[in-house]
Image (cartoon, rainbow, N blue to C red):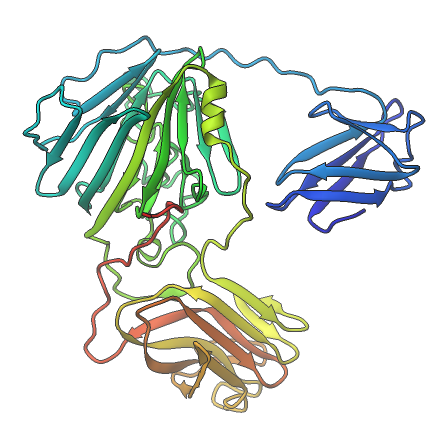
Length: 487
């Protein structure tokens, strides 16, 4: 109908048809277009949005309408409104006493927020406006300010102590100011413990349904997670979360700046479900993530044999805890124009007339190129091993040996062929090929694979082979999954 970023559909009905518009971009779009024939201009000369109640005059058969980023409009020819569904009953937890072991606790209405640092010590008085807590891991400073309570942490995260955990009890609603969306939902318990007499308990690593092994997680299904920065980063200018009780009173965690591997909001029902609570985990190391995700980040094609879990890495986090009296105050603290989606990993650009997939391999009937931008840096020197189609004739022929050009960061590198016939189908015979050794440290990289003849093919993953006696790295570069790093 109009903009390529707007999805449009018409629901035909004898009483009242509806023109549905959805902005699929992170930008505000002004629509100025002729109404489609299936949705003629109403006699009233106006359209109404059943979602917002806003109306607009038509200019003849022409619609002029503005859609904010990711906004939806249901346009009708007469005033209409979507039914208001009643909120389900939510049991608000009774106000709980603060845990005696909690390092810091704060209450607002029915909400109780706690930060526990077991084994950390402070030489300051408990009532002091600024308290510094130290341990072998690092330092956490909690300071009362006019605008709220500031928390700054600098520590070394380990697999045993992966970061900071804020526990929230008594919340009826949670919200997150994400990069592309404002996330908001009721706190409804999704899982309950099985009766003791059943002899059954949920095992996170059990083969029950689909476990995303080889994907985002490492042999577990963390079903308690509501949100995580690895999937939806925090908004870079308004990185914040909020929690509210049944009366709308609550906490806002504002200005959350961190270089965490991941920030997770969970109800922990897949781990230790009692007592009922939410946990905001600022994780220097997220041990649930697949090793390749821990090491390289999400959406990277690198493969590295012998990759070890991340054992330790520095973690910085800072935020301001603010209390509010209404849901409107909380919403204002998280309000921001949403931004376009960014690639979650390496950004692939394909320049080819046609590409066919067969057996996990990409076939190019005509010459073309695949370019991966934003490849994660890896400390050390490596050969990069690919799987390419070497022959159209047989498992031993090499008629396509000169049909590939591979460039790293703009530099074309010679291709060395290795083991033949590692996979074949019909007359397509594949072999191992390597470039390098090359230094993959420093900044992010670009890899371009260009085919020079028809019907070349390749497998879209790259094995890193340490050069010489190099060992696969066991530590990780600073992955900023939080989407809002230190300033």
